[in-house]
Image 1: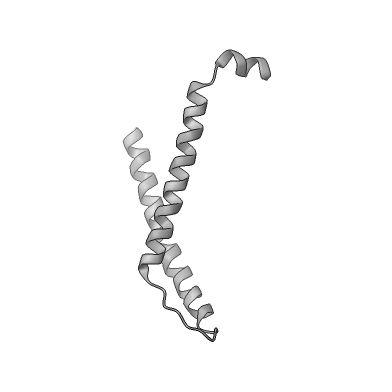
Image 2: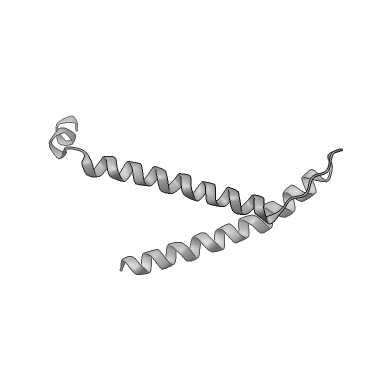
Length: 80
């Protein structure tokens, strides 16, 4: 079962990211064309931003999972 969730999550994230890059890339290129100083958008910018977002999300989930795993159940139940 975990393999199915991993494959589904990977498929959904890849598809959503590819749709995001296509749509936002075209919108940003159109928006940036109205400025006096022109700049080019490369695929590199989108790849780096996607990797940074993934790393930040993975780090956040990892830290919160570690905190939940090391928390005392007795203390948690007392506070509820």
